[in-house]
Length: 108
Image 1 (cartoon, one colour):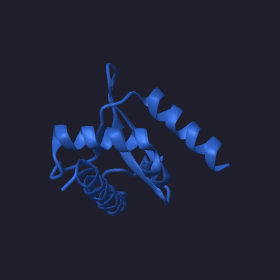
Image 2 (cartoon, helix red, strand yellow):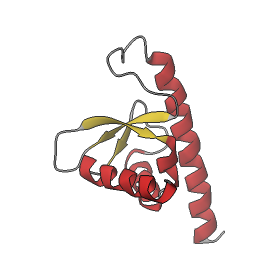
Image 3 (tube, one colour):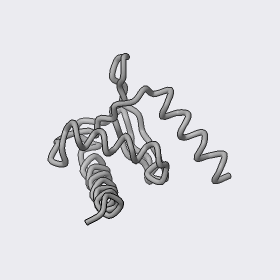
């Protein structure tokens, strides 16, 4: 199996894990997340890198951003696919906001 094929398989696994996480968080919304309602088509992550961890909600379309996919691979290497709870992303909130702006500019 080539490196490209392995990377594609890992991306599919990461997308599936993010979708499962979103469903799980939606079910927990009334219990743990009453103040942080997750909008349809979004998922929660914890962003951190040299700063206080911050919970943010991202649109599913960010899963198409190549740089964000790289962050998911880094998170998978560090925490594995069996990590429980909110997805942790090794990135600053400023970098994630930049990616979202890029997505908005190219899709709008």
